[in-house]
Length: 249
Length: 249
DNA sequence: ACAAAAGTGTTCGGGTTACACCCATGG
DNA sequence: CCATGGGTGTAACCCGAACACTTTTGT
Image (cartoon, rainbow over all chains, first blue to last red; front, side, top):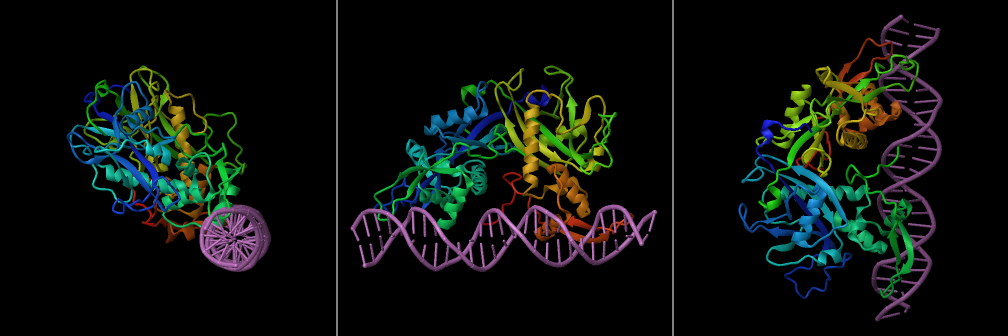
């Protein structure tokens, strides 16, 4: 944090990028008759993310994480949100810093340091992403070769998502205000890629105090109507940065 | 990660800082009138860190984290190591990125983004720190008012240290190659600030597979000679950055 | 022999896992 | 009445906390 220093005069570019995760059913483009609703998170959902195609050198044509340079008058998170809105029209509820990537040779052009964020968005938010030649969704586990070190970055973000899902309450960022336990369990199963026991899952969630019943139910299914839940306000997200309130000792 | 952009031309300063942790006995130098009661069973080692005094504006005279600007030809971690060596002569074994701090108003001077690292050093390494008017050790839990947002940064680093101590194997970074279980337990007790049951601690460590006996013992104490241990090579540090090998699914 | 710390054994209780079983609804 | 998922009950198991107890040294 000391100022000046000769070496600093040659400027280092400062950029932000964001790994955006959403849950989508594997609708299978090769199977257009497929009945699956891509917005239904309960139907064997998977983790997807939107990428943008680079339209200039270097790495022109390659898919890359959305991002851009940081302005002098905006914070890192503000820069991430601005770039997200500009490139994908997304305004995620959950946005957390992931890591600062700063290897000397990570960009073949000029020296660039990228502070990378990761975001979680709900299906209805994901709908708003303007698709086209330049923006498209990809399944997180089967990405093409991306620009720069972005494959490494996505892998790291995926690891963080899965690790954090096990001890934190971030799953609700994929859901709306009200949800059934089956939907919540579907989020966990999609991210962790393994089936969970419905009975034990219910008890763990209820005893954690993270959720509370709204009183409503969902009718229309060919079975007993499930209760609706909402997240309790005092949910601890744990380590969403230095400003997160800590659990008292 | 896109290039150019008008807003980027006004340069943003990129700095690195490091929070260095070491364990020291509270010798009570700062409190000569009442050095802790030697019979007090709660007395144990504490977490200390070295700070440097700023010798120019802004915030001249205030204590601050060691750090400096990043050169165009060095990675972020290399910049952290270089600044550490220059200001404190430390070359820590354990060095991990903590967070990138980039609020617009965090430095009253010009716009500065700091990528902060945290390091753990052994007592023999800590000895090498050149003390004087400009460098001094402070107990982590009783810091003076530091420059800029460095109090916030240290608090966050402390939280990370204590959180990670509970699920990772970073404690060995405070110790030499060989150590007794009492010494290892002392590290945990100092960082977590609570006594641990020696019997259960032994079993947890032995069953974890993180340590293995060297065969040697320590003679000279007025008691049964304790066995010496070393860390097994395959210790998982967990989330020391994107390049850390992940636990297989 | 005694003190002190190393090291072992055992019990207890809370939490997780596995799975049997009942409930409510649409067809 | 049956199929389907929602929801409850329960026994087995695992693991950490607590603590009594034995071992081995120096004085």
